[in-house]
Structures are given as structure tokens and as C-alpha cells.
Length: 180
Image (cartoon, rainbow, N blue to C red; front, side, top):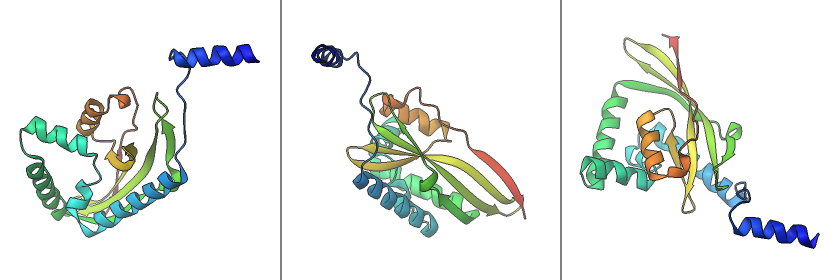
């Protein structure tokens, strides 16, 4: 037994052992539930700054740096774009099903979640559409952030800023017309 422990300790010290996985703690689960509820409320209230605030700050900073604009200008532009887009549609329903979230872990054992998300919207001339997607719930320095995984450009930036997500497969969005 002593020899087995010594071999295991040596393997771990050399990095040859598996990453130590961990689930999310009760405090982290509560913080995520609060974050999801705040995002849900922001969506329903069209609170664009709060919606933008769920994106990891390093991702926003990368976008601002790539566009060569100050972060505050980027956030204002994003809020303006959201307002224009959402002015052309009516949000019928929005639901992030935290109970059905898939708990996963990165290679280093850090947990993340894929949260099933359903948005039903209505637009003149198009009718009602249901978008079924997943939202990434990820920790950064102890805080939860949310990233839409169906946006290839956003996932690309996420992987640049957080290379530990390189190689992580995210499910595609699906859109279903619901008629008028």
C-alpha cells in the first residue's frame, strides 16, 4: 500500500496523473442560479447593459481590442445593436433550464455547464420562431458568466481568451417556425 501511494504521488507530481475533477460547490450552484435569474430578468426587461454584463470581461476586452475601440464604446455599441434588433421582434418567452443543465469539466477538472435555452420570438412577416440552444455557464475568478454557444464567432473568441475550451464541442442551435 505504501508503495502504491508513493507511485501515485510521484505520478501526480510529474503531471502524469489525471486532472482532479470537481463538481460545483453549493455556493457556486447558488451563485449560478442567481446569475441565470438575473439574466432572465434582464432579457424580459430589455436591460441591455445587464445582458452584456453576463459575458466574461476578458471576452469583451478581446472584442474591443480587436475593434480598436475602448471597452465602454464597445459596450454602448453592443447595447445599441441589441436595442435595434430586439425592436423588430417581440420576445414571447425565454427559458434557461438550469435543472436540465449538463455538468461537464475541462481537462484541468474545472467545471462548466451547458444550459438548455429556449427563446420564442415573433416578428412581422415571419411569425413565431423557437430557437433551441445551449448557454455555457463558466467560472472566471469565482464568478459565473454566460456565453451563447451557437454563435461561432463568439465561441472562437472564447477559445482565444480561454484556450482550455479549445476542442470542447458545443451543440448547434436549432430554429423551428411555429407559425403565426
